[in-house]
Length: 167
Image 1: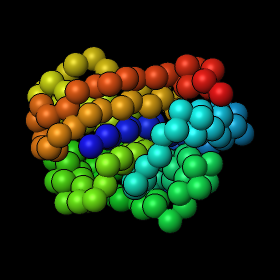
Image 2 (image 1 turned 45 degrees about the vertical axis):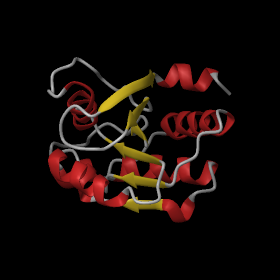
Image 3 (image 1 turned 180 degrees about the horizontal axis):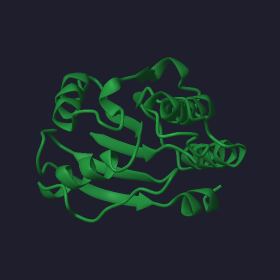
């Protein structure tokens, strides 16, 4: 199975520290345009997803919606609270395991540091491998059988600037 992890695009600055305000932050116009270019690069690379899972926070949902639109995958997009910034990663991995039947490629759209922590756990068995996804960055993992621990090989990690050059 191929597991892709994408951090949301550039979002509006938080107006306050309130959690509700953070959940409603949208992508900036620059962030939306960059995510659209990244999605077009994915299409050009012939990358397709059987399922897109997104955090419920607005900036991630918009990022996932843009990717789904550019790749014409609208009906394959689902929102899960497990990808929220404080979502339980072990539960997310169990949920992914239950969704794998008949699927070869899944995209997760979420936040830092959760995504890099997940990548670290899946490729090394610990959460401190020093990986960081930039806003709009994408990582590809190859997984034979998913579990919370070392079970994946990182095939690539691309920054948004690299992705937009692939158009």
